[in-house]
Image 1: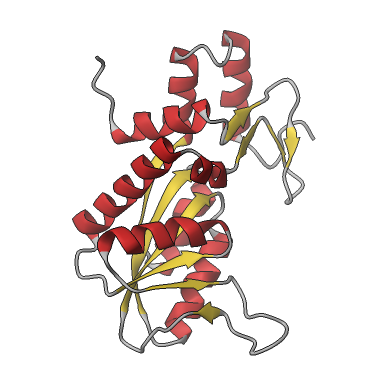
Image 2 (image 1 turned 90 degrees about the vertical axis):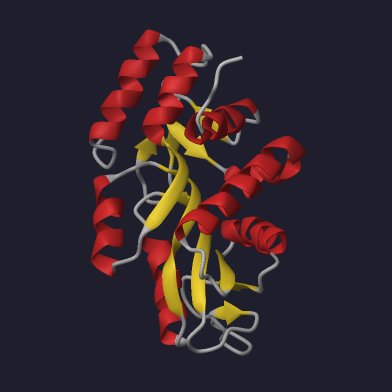
Length: 212
């Protein structure tokens, strides 16, 4: 049996359950307007106990390894809520979730749940693209008086802009898997052809302008 890394194993899980779909010949359109040969919806992992448990255990291991003094787990709304709750339960820690911006109605809350000034928080996110919404959530926690230790995510596209955004915010983040590993696994598992591989590599070089 091949000894897979966590990055490889997570990538294989996401491909096998179709949480990540690769369509180099029929690109998706993202909300940003970008055309993309890849679409990622890690919420699908919640429907598959084996993948769900592996992801939960791996995210928990990241937190224990890098953020051992954490007081509370916060899920980034909406896709990070369920993942964060699973991790908080596994680690026996308090949980809250946070929106990128306050609600426009009711109490106008940005954070749902109980959080105290000075508490050390780790954010859980399902996917990092530019990092914008994740960092807005982190800012909301800081405004509430919390100390954000960092973020753990299931998957990142590894865009330079996301790396720079997190660096500028001085927030470390760790992703269980990334685009380069995913593409390698997709080739090994025969999910894509050689010509599709070239397309996927081209997109990664300049995603905002690809096929415009």
